[in-house]
Amino acid sequence: MLVHEGHVQAMRFFTSNNADSYDLISRVATFGQDIAWKHEILGVVSRCRYILDLACGTGILSSMLAKGGKNVVGIDLTFEYLLTLKGKLKMPIAQGTAEILPYRDESFDAIVSSYLAKYVDVQKVINECWRVLRPGGIVVFHDFTYPRGLICNLWHVYFELLRLAGRFFTSWKVVFGQLDDVIKKSDWVDQTICALDNRKFQNVNCRYYTAHTSAIVSAEKP
Image 1: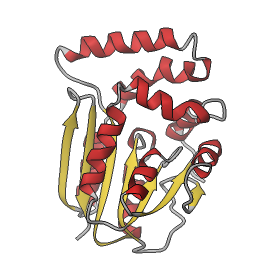
Image 2 (image 1 turned 120 degrees about the vertical axis):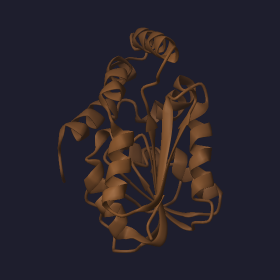
Image 3 (image 1 turned 90 degrees about the vertical axis):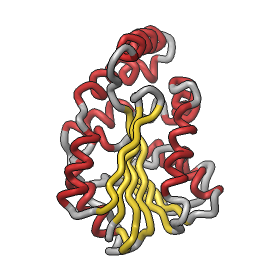
Image 4 (image 1 turned 60 degrees about the horizontal axis):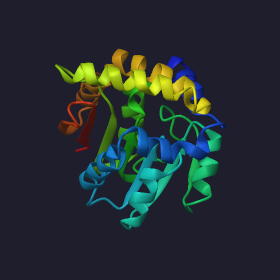
């Protein structure tokens, strides 16, 4: 398994101590926007049947896809998160990194991910996506983005409040204390678009959501 700083950061954030509370935290901490963003992902892959969920975590997005009649396969770095997923959804899962996928060439109609891009070597992930996607397949990356303009002030206040909350929700103290810095330093949108272009994906598209605090980048394998 590849290990680099992005993996190390992800392993600091997502642990056995917070796996059972992830679904609640992701919903409350984003004021319900997490589900709204994931519905946007569902719309992008609506015509696809066999879907790989990268960094599937506790299975929030996988569950939504499965309820829509999709055949879903998941992979995640954190074993305890996969155990949580297994307790609520029956689907093929694997522990591993998105940079080295344990799947055959041209296995999937679509590949989706939520909150993955800022932790990985995007070019390596996209190379693997190209390999396991069928012709005409769609790849989707979703993650947080650092906002622009006046909303930045509110964004910083929000994370100060999260830091205070970390005193009470101790299993999330590291995440609440460091996530803003990870987001600010990440250039995942531009890197992803560049990597998709390098790999000759077509119809590359980027949309921002919720006052530029989140983005979805998608593309199609010709």
